[in-house]
Amino acid sequence: MNEILETVAAAAPEIRAGLPDRRRYADAENPSGERQLAADEYADKLLGDRLTALGSVASYASEERTDVIESEGRYHVAVDPLDGSSNLRSNNAMGTIVGVYDEPLPAPGRSLVASGFVLFGPITTMVAAEAGTVTEYVLEDGNPTIATESVTLPAEPTVYGFGGRVPDWPAAFADYAESIEQELKLRYGGAMIADVSQVLTYGGIFAYPALKSAPDGKLRLQFEGNPIAHIVETAGGASSDGARSLREVEPSDLHERVPVHVGNESLVDRLEAALGESRHA
Ligand code: AHG
Ligand code: MN
Ligand code: MN
Image (tube, protein in one colour):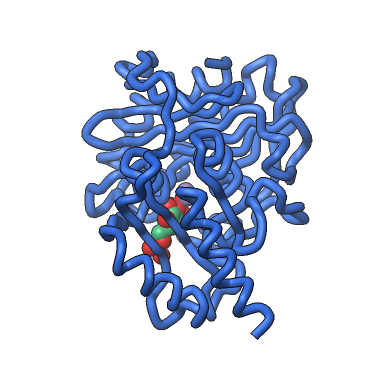
């Protein structure tokens, strides 16, 4: 595990321990215009300090910060300090996402050399894609122990989770969702990484699609879409913005949003076919 992922793993116990007293809203908004929790700010500050102190880090970017912090190393790190932080008040799962790019941000996902997420569930785990393999670690006091050597999506899909409100889904996605609902079981919990963990474990698809009210969807390419696409594709699955792999999207803005669909390749192919038809209709 490279030192950047190790540093994120080592910070997990302190982030988790800091959650109970930080369930309140801070009085600031993040660059995406969303209200920040005290926990978002706390996790971002802790990770920013630890990661910029590493010799290998050239810059640190966060969903919670407008600008990038420059440093002198080689890798450009993008972090979602707390993904699913709205689950804190309801005490449901959430976690941290980290992407390690080897070019300045914003960067396409194909330049990721490592990606990981820490999941604060009943157990604190880290799932990381590095050197063509996805590994699951149990984190005890921030120390990683391998739990699953090589995570691969089950061939047979079982679960699905789609974000946004049904009336806000464009017709083509709503039709696709209707066919998926006949086949799979609903698993949607409001934190992408917890829902993606279900897909990695049981097979299926997670999507936060383009909405009528938000054609670019809700999730951010640099901090959420790319790292999760890297993990799911490395685990044998596929990702799409509706037309191509998320990792092929050429970004123009650090905080740009993108429709996110990740899971079994067969399900992603069906999605692109469904949306593709609608584009020509
Ligand atoms: P974050 O807490 O980092 O803003 O991420 C929340 C995201 C993602 O984790 C989740 O899939 C989605 O927001 C849930 O959105 P809804 O509340 O609209 O379901
Ligand atoms: Mn998030
Ligand atoms: Mn977040």
